[in-house]
Length: 368
Ligand code: 8OZ
Image 1 (cartoon, rainbow, N blue to C red):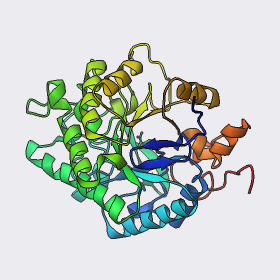
Image 2: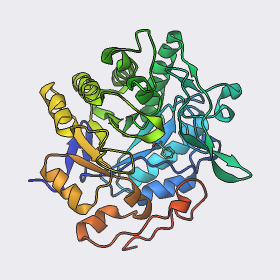
Image 3: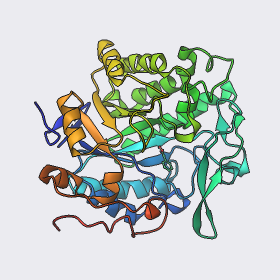
Image 4: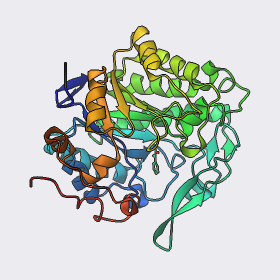
């Protein structure tokens, strides 16, 4: 039986262990440009089997928060290149999470102050972060406009271009498609945010269409073996809701099984919160079985609230990878700490979003 600390292959990614640094939004990239401080932060965490970057906007329209990084301009790609070099220099592997926020945005962050875009013109009951007088401040998201079907090929193309830039120019080992947490692709998937009556709304097949078009375009451009995807069937984040998520997500993974992806990344329960939601039951074993039965060979990555014991159990039960979020904020050497079963540093929520080195690169490792 493998342990958390044994190597594993995820598509083309040869990973030294099964511990993954989950994507974590930290709002430390002014003007969307990744900084040298971010290179230090990621390199500190390079003993993870795999690092997934914080969510990274594929275009200006895809932006929804202050000071989150992008992947659509030369300076952004140069900034990421320094980060991938630092991580590779420290012996790590790193993929970038490709992000379009859809309706989870604010007119102040959009091109020409326009409305954020969404499957339907339904405002998300959620907040975003803007900088007010230099202070990160939570603000209600703006009312979105419904995307015209004629605009969707451009969005698919933008994902594809971002994936190509990520591996060819910025030096990433691969990409993760962010299809979770109530952002654009999840908004299309779920009935609570998608009331379209065209080919992109209504039936499961139609609601999954944009996600699958994006996945196929990226796989066509860079190969499935360095492409992963993150899904959150029942998350409550950003007003996400589907009336019947099991058949929806069973369908999605059956389709993804044809693409030979490197991995499927599952958020179990409410992102960063309860793993079990009484009013949103979901059978993850059924989901995995559906993926495998359809020929899916990608690594199965689980996430949400894992500690050492639960993670070890998950690997015994057949998970290939376990992603840790908050523990990675405070423990750059999480792999060593889990291996030695030593206490973990406690993350400071006041420095999660925005700021500088404090609460970012100053968490101590056990050994220098
Ligand atoms: C926390 C704050 C802002 C964004 C996600 C990208 O939930 C995020 C995010 C998390 O996936």
